Length: 520
Image 1: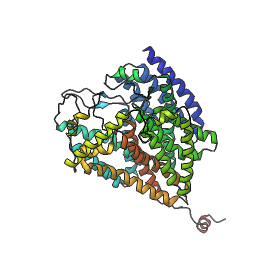
Image 2 (image 1 turned 120 degrees about the vertical axis):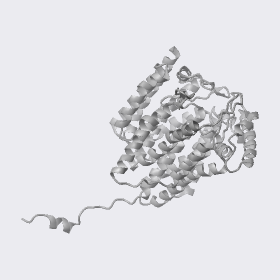
Image 3 (image 1 turned 60 degrees about the horizontal axis):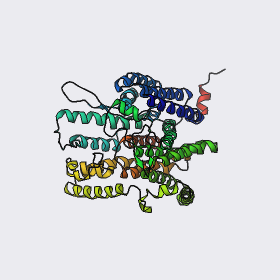
């Protein structure tokens, strides 16, 4: 308990500093009352998480706090994104009579029940009151079709004792309910509730603030060799992979409250992409560059190849989507070369080159070999079951079980194709590719008449491209899954705003107004 209180003091000290320094920036994109409420909620839940020894006691604080603050907030999406990783997403089984468990509850689902679902009902009531059509589109249909496929095709859990659990009608209902809660409600609320440019911008700024809170803590964890949130998670549950210290080249890989170094790096890469747009709206050069420096240090501390490549991809896509793309790409290449050269000649140079496969790095070569074997075996299974996949594929990949006792399917596309076939992969990709294509069309059309709105779309496009690059090297878990659907929802909201013609003025012409005046 003493170590946990020490960790809490460290977290609060960094948070107090970041909230104070970030407040002038945050107020450029939102109101002071919302900032204060979100900050206080973040602090209350953080203190409760570290101090309360039981998850169910924590929910007694979290549920009313999230419900009350979420209803008061003028932008629930920004509220949601700031608190997405206020504590690690530790799953605790909900006990039930007659069944082993209902489902797991974690911070993601607490936010869904307390913030997203009430917001979804609010959006629905507003549409009914205004007699507005449902605006059900291709993205909704593709996502629901993909969800229906994953609900219908049962993939047994990967149990180390090789037991294959049978499916049941209760399991089908559970999968359907959790798909709606975890996935569709998130996309629906983000895509419908962001009803203005300001809503989208404020959501991006809130996510950037959340990453500014965890990036310095990530650097601290690496330098100190101490995972700050470990005791919190191990007190609540005894999962075999919780509290596991991951090392690379002798250095601790931080995870803070994200649950995984890759998820940490991914979040910071997305925050970098958001700030490429938000920074353009900040006049002070130091205030514009400071967040980029913070995210960059956090990315280096994460020591993760995928997010590094993802950040570069985001920057390249951002530059390529802007006017005079070739000139911008050349400048970006020169700038990237200068930065990379400076890093390589620094004391960090050898540590970076040693983990990159294309530089023949010597660190974690076993990880690269494992991925090669996994890709080879996955392709064999896809050829055998090309259309709807093989739901028992994990039982046929036992030779790929790692020392931690898991079969690490480290490629999201391969995982979907193996378990749900090319049909499942096509639906999954249709959902996000439609968002990319339509958002790019809006950006191209509005580059001249509305360059700021076009630049906002460019940032979203770049982050989606970076996400598509990064999920090729990781499982679809933690921040990867949540932000994938958040980005799709933000893109859908952006497309709707960009494709909706501006409202025409209802003011009367001068002659009509004059004729309406009473005579003297």
